[in-house]
Amino acid sequence: MQAKHGKMIQRIQSLYMALVVVFSLVTYFFVPIWVHEDLGIMADEAKGFPAIIGLIIALTLFSLLQYKKRKAQFVVNRVVILLNFTWMVLVILPAYTEFSILDLEYSPVEIANGGISPLINIVLLVFANRGIRRDENLIKSIDRLR
Image 1 (cartoon, rainbow, N blue to C red):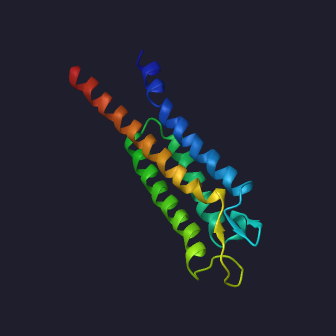
Image 2: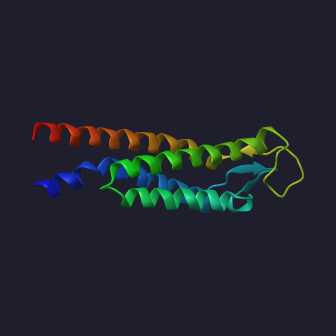
Image 3: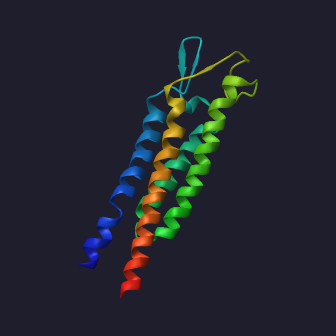
């Protein structure tokens, strides 16, 4: 009975974290982050984006595999949330300032559909952390009853 219960607890968090990986991969390969003169600019064209998105994907997959270590999973998810905030800032800066991580002379860029991916990831990771915390509290209450 304990083995079934252990696997059941982690399902919703795993789904949220898997969605973070999917959104990050789709954004990196298929969805433009900025639009410049009617051309979409992908994440791989910006300095540092491949590293940040790769780190987000790797750490989220690592966290997904740590389903038996809920505290470690919670901490890794917080680090991934911070990386997504960094990603979000790097998406917003070229659109509103002269700061450029793109190989373009300064001219305005607009944030495209891929620019909302870090925000979606943050929301999903917050939901995952809520589920992890709920499971941790459930385990503690079960241990108190023993």
